[in-house]
Length: 397
Image (cartoon, rainbow, N blue to C red):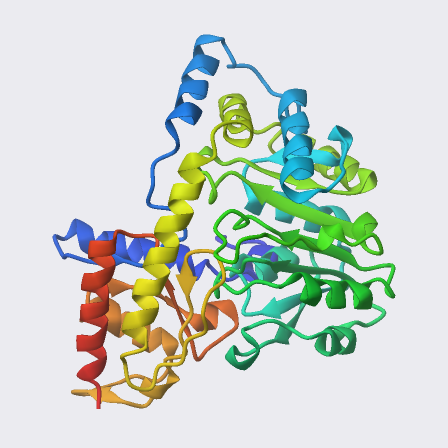
């Protein structure tokens, strides 16, 4: 009998991956689709990273790597955290995994018991609630709207914590909104969490280097909660290395040990060549990362200018990442022919089928009035995409 596990049946498929695939399917049919659904830089990995990987192959890094990562990579992470973030960690607090997504689900499985609650501020990355479910936990959503720049308040956080709360997971800069928490905002959240000693703080900082404010802030900087913070990062976004699949955590030793034990039964160590390449990324020339950041800011401003010209669109100003997350609910209820746009899912499908632009419905991120638009694409494609967006929306009445 074809029957999947109850665990799998509870999960939702990734909307971002689904829209990306739908876009590629149409492109394979010869349709000129501009894909603004994808969550990865459109730049190539830096040359010095590729050279390090080639050398690693020649040096026969073709054997199993240590489960928690090569000592030299864990040391490079420690040095990065000290130099760039003024955070003190030791190598035994670092665990390297097959991408930051893998890192997060490792932590969930290591600390969550059935019935435990995990706080998930919304809008959220699509995988957070599903990863909580994988660990048999219960996601508790804390909603934040565009009026608060999609950031939750300390009062909302305090109100959501119960005796069952085991963790909170959030990203700053955020996927899908591009919003980020200032140092003062993080301190206010940390002061609330400091009163609840059972709560583990999972801080997803994968977009750290795509930041338009000048300085990244981590909740791990606050001494009153640092011993309960799991800092998650990796090389995917900031170094254009999504396909290398390399993420890491910096965590209390007991969580690092638990994650290593778990990973030893799942994947073992991350790919050896990718680990050596990641050392080069973390310790080498950051010029390519800075160049990407400049390009992404220019593209952000391009999209904001166009969105500001469209009737009924509300949009916050992203402080980082490479997404805008406009509220397009003005167009819900409008029609074209016999088709009525009921929600963000209908709107995104209409934009894909008629406007040939791939975006992602905000409902997948816990914000049904919004649509996620990635600007990880060329300036020329973004200009054309905005032209198509304006044209498609103008046809609705």
